[in-house]
Amino acid sequence: MTIHLTLEQEQRVQAVIGAGTYKSLDQLVEAALTALEQCPESGIPLIPANLEALLMDGLHSPVLTEEDFWNSVDARTAILLAEHGPRQPS
Image 1 (cartoon, rainbow, N blue to C red):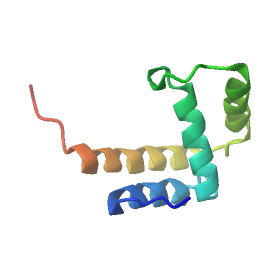
Image 2 (cartoon, rainbow, N blue to C red):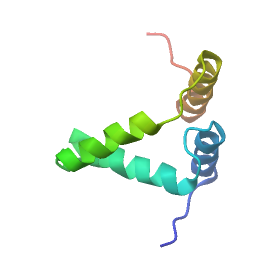
Image 3 (tube, rainbow, N blue to C red):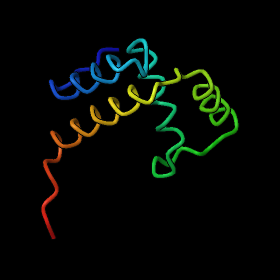
């Protein structure tokens, strides 16, 4: 299967992989599919096997130092700001 990403999507994927959250594109796609299956809005039922897989993913995920955690938050915030722009005052 071939998937075509926009430049922005590719940058987001590379940022996530670069942050060390996932070691490969395969891992990232698997996690994204698993998350989609767990999302109530997706219409896909929550089944125990999927919940167990999520739990195992969490247990096997890398432990971040506090600095790495905040760097990942900063990176994700930058991505969100680039996508949506700064929030306008009410």
